[in-house]
Image (cartoon, rainbow, N blue to C red):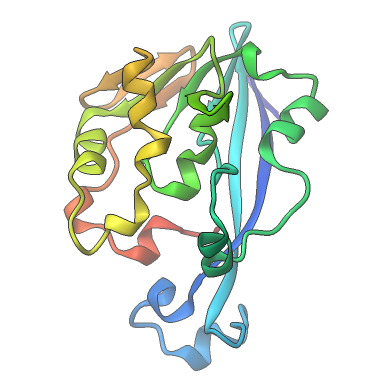
Length: 201
């Protein structure tokens, strides 16, 4: 899709499952289960999406999906599914990981930052080696020191290796990061609800 000088591609990193009650909060189950039936473990299936943007000759990736650094226990809990993972979808559009110029993390929950890094030769390295990774400074600080309530949303392997590699571009407030593309301050991490974290996924 094109909008002015911007070109957009919606990418998918598969699906996963989260508890339906946690996702919908105060919405009664009889209302939401008609649209999104839960499985036998009360989990609803959610898509993991990312956005590829072309502007001013640059490739920008907004969020990086769930990645592939999951052990058997986590795969069972979250029921990750899907064959066409994010790197494959990029390649299908003729874009190699090294061609990504900018990665914007809207926030650092595991289903939005998983492909920030990957294992190579037993070491965690940036998946997009030539990119700067953008995140709000407050979100990174919160990811380093999450609350007990949201600790499970953050996986250190997705963001700490980027510090060691000197890849972060930390923002404080709304800012244009490329022509026509801005990064905005997310909701206060302490005020987020689980359902607000995953609207429409």
